Length: 347
Image (cartoon, rainbow, N blue to C red; front, top):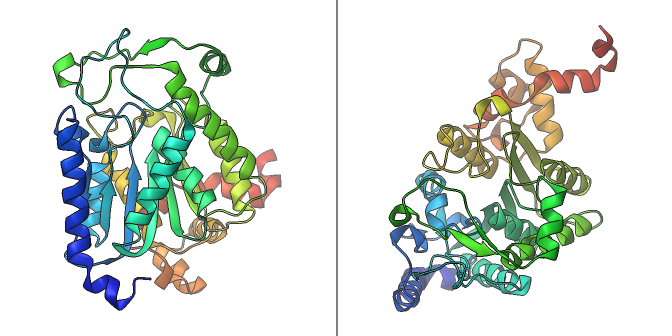
């Protein structure tokens, strides 16, 4: 928690941070406005600071909708441009974008920004999409006591296809995204050297290994069945591993019928349910519930009780976000009932 003198110096600290980053990005320069680091800050320190890492070859624009939602809820929000990303240039197969090929580059970047976030509020929430989710997961393990919780959106721990993993491990070629967007409207990079993606594969392997026996900050892992890029099985394994030592971790997987893609954060990138995602993210940030309590709420609601009745019975209303009912409507209640009453599955 920030002390009196830290709070007194907050206006200077926040101003210096934004001006310093702007100056650095002006010198690069960055590709366009969507590639610039984004800061949504209040005039005073906040109870929580949300630190978000965007996806591989993408840019900070991805987290702006969610960032605005959490800023309006009263939190400071930082969305820094990831190392080597978003730079202007004539990038192509012969001149690939300057993406890091050493995981230490990302790890140090994450640690540096965690330190910056700690100067702007009492507790830090980290989050990320895809490769950014990989970094957030690593931080949640590396700095478990310093992080309030982590929001992991389709983190890249490995590919959805093991053949692709083999190619990523073995080859060092150039890959270009298949995208119909006109080149002048593309915000992130159109392609990359495979070695730059290998970094996340290595980090994903490390995360899964460490999660088996190390403590972590609470994590909310969000997957989508329509994801063609990353392994959902890895998400489930990570959740099972961390839940043993961190009961306040949650997991949710969007049904395939919703057709929510890997790039799940914005409507512009294919998720027409963007607002729903923002609501459930806020529900996690604002709640202090274990996964067992979430399941108990859902189970009791199958008995005809309302959400308000259940949390009153369990005496946990003060630990549940106002947005918690929206998340509970999504929880697979049938699966919870069958887990508690296996004999019903035979009927």
